[in-house]
Image 1 (cartoon, rainbow, N blue to C red):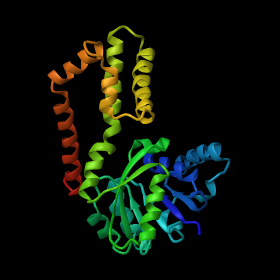
Image 2 (image 1 turned 135 degrees about the vertical axis):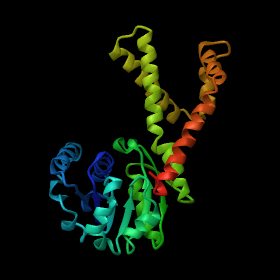
Image 3 (image 1 turned 90 degrees about the vertical axis):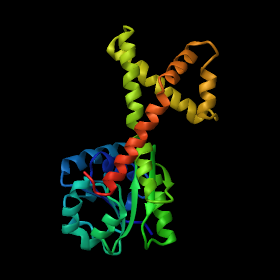
Image 4 (image 1 turned 180 degrees about the horizontal axis):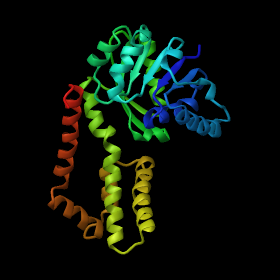
Length: 276
């Protein structure tokens, strides 16, 4: 039997997940809901181009028009819209599986708004757009074994899925993998700026920075070595890389970077507890 999955919210993350599911075994029972029909239409064109199938017949601008038939609801609205959505549609989620990707909305909050739904809290990252997300997830009460397996398969359509042993680990995944792409992009920006200081034209400086990191990521993914082993492979004793690494060590780079991640974790915990 084909699962009927409804994604509510066609923003960056909801749209990325929709595209991934539309190219998976879940495509047949997939629907999307967003108040902005043009946004959904643009996503539909991308799916049509990729699959040859037009999903436009499964687009809705009102959740009340499509919730009844859904078995699984993936909630991808803005976190500040949770209360109004719950007030309008909460009763229709009774008995349904709810996968929430709302940052900072913990299980207690979600189950308070949707007491009769079976809830899973998940935290994907930006790489869902290219099917390479690292998604942490944690189950609420009431989900059967088969339902848990189905949720994991849904999450795996847009990358790797990691079951967290506690809800606290969702906040930690947020600091590590949710915020992680920004750490990567920041390093690309720095390398690009340095290339510019060396005299490379802006377009070339950007290409040098991007390809350096993307190439390294591909090598790491396919090379069968640990990160430490790759560092040693690149850093010859007395060479340029070794000089750079020694400078990072002297300037306490690891402590600074680690402190930044812990700061993100602290903030994720505050948001989950409802602090502004």
